Length: 132
Image 1 (cartoon, rainbow, N blue to C red):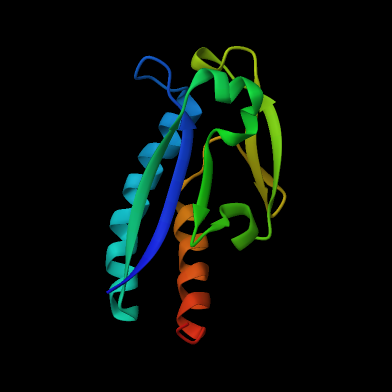
Image 2: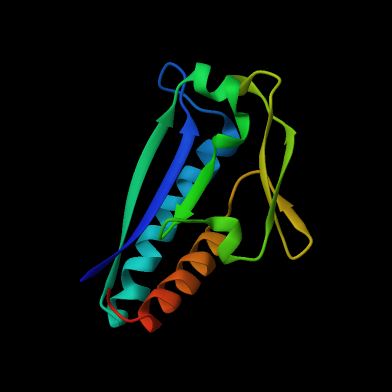
């Protein structure tokens, strides 16, 4: 089976993250389960990698938190979306954290539907490319 790499990076402070990252993490776990079945006929399997940002790295670049790549490409690129910011809470302090806008709707936490959609687009794109 060919791997479909999915990487999620978020701030983790003392083992905790903010609610929006926690919600994204839950959605990612559910999306990976859905993708296991959906990608099997294509001979692909999702492989989720979790990366933790420390607080110093986060302070330097708050938009690096709650960031997702699928097949080495940002999630928002697969969905023809864009990134923005909004005030966060708890672990993030008063930072302006990453949001993703798709089809006129802005998301602080990335829902399962967007994750699955982006991954399916990526998988079909990769499937149509010749092996290198």
